[in-house]
Each structure stands twice: as structure tokens, then as C-alpha cells.
Length: 154
Image (cartoon, rainbow, N blue to C red):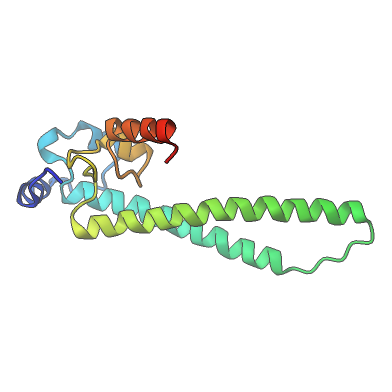
């Protein structure tokens, strides 16, 4: 990373003083000098933990639903239910992958790396993190990464 860890810590220590819970609007109004301060990190931790909780609940509901043994006399009904199960399992697989990313993002908050591009060390940006809280690359780095993938197939 290009950003000095000491400078990241100094930026994070500039705490947003409002005791009220931060909103997206308040975070967007903060200046660059307040980037990834304690209040912003708490906001994103809370958002990520909420996503994590929802994903775990969905996984538990799917497990319970798939364990139900329904008997169908009509083969068409059985085929419909099996197709619904297959769709549900694919959705849960996507959610499992997202859960892994969410937990990695929470770990980056703990390590002091959250919000910083893992490629360049520059800020990822509040707008991007609000849209994709699990982002590890700035928009520019992500575009370069996708372009490389497209060109070289990896």
C-alpha cells in the first residue's frame, strides 16, 4: 500500500463529534480530512453486521426449508419444487460468497485497512463504499482490474 499506516491512523482519529447515529447524508457531507474516522468506521461496521445477520438468517431459513420432506403424487409438482430448490440453492451460494466478503470487510475495519484500495493504497471513496460496502478497490483500480480480466481472461 502507498498510504502510510500512521497517516491512516491520524485521519481515522479525527472523530466526527455528533453523538447521533450517522446517516449516509452526514457521511457524504464530511470532508476528505475526516475520511474513515471512527464514526464512519462504526457506521460501516454496523451496516456490514446488518448484512451479515440477514445473510445468516437467509441461510438458516433455506436449510430449514430444504429439510422439509414433501410428498407429491404429481411428477410435475415434484419437478416444480425441485426447480425452486435449485434456484434457492444458487441464490444461497451467491449469498455465501457475499457473506465471506462481508466478514473480510469487517476484518479490514478491525485491522485499520477498511476504505483503502488494496491495489493503490488510496481512498476507495465514501460513495463507492455506500453502494458496495465490501469494495476492496477504488473505482479506477476496479476498472483496470476488469479490463485486465477481459483482455487476459483472468
